[in-house]
Image 1 (cartoon, rainbow, N blue to C red):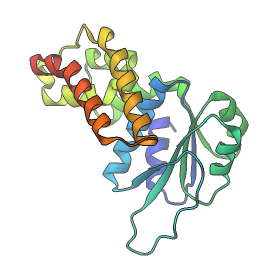
Image 2: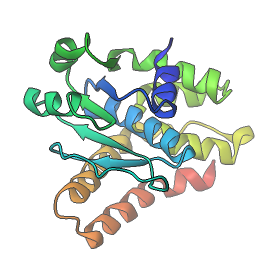
Image 3: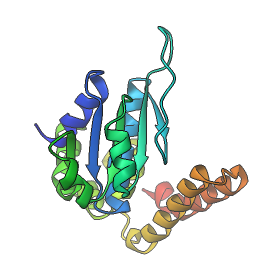
Image 4: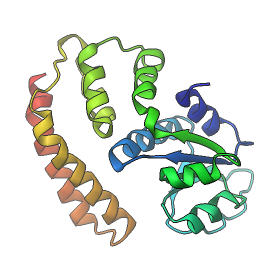
Length: 207
């Protein structure tokens, strides 16, 4: 089974409780995080981002289904989530991937290029070398670029200047994530979102 089917199956199967992803780095990790968010949104499943483990409240018949999501390279933290009763997705490093790969469902992010190929060609039925190359080069921008592609498939052209702006967008997204995780300053989050929109604005309008 390929990793895309594995993730989809995990989201849909309540009996599967733990998924550990070797994210390799933040750029690749963001591709898998966005993929999981898409699948969870389709199934109306709530993703609960947690830095440390805490037991979820017992769900009643009408409660919203939820999955814990943790980003950590700390072995003890990863272990706490894996041995919990909650349904969890843990993003970690290769060291923890090797330690826990025998006891839970795992994905190796080093295969991200194969996974992107499968997701675009098999799942989304996209057969365009420009968008595929873009997603392989900047996996953390794959879903925002795919949104742009689907708005205007016939006239889509890869932005040749994206290499210059992609690192800036990545830094902005890291800042947004840190704000949500820590201070939760909505004004700063809104400011970062405006900066990202400004960077992408003209390539979006002219494609």
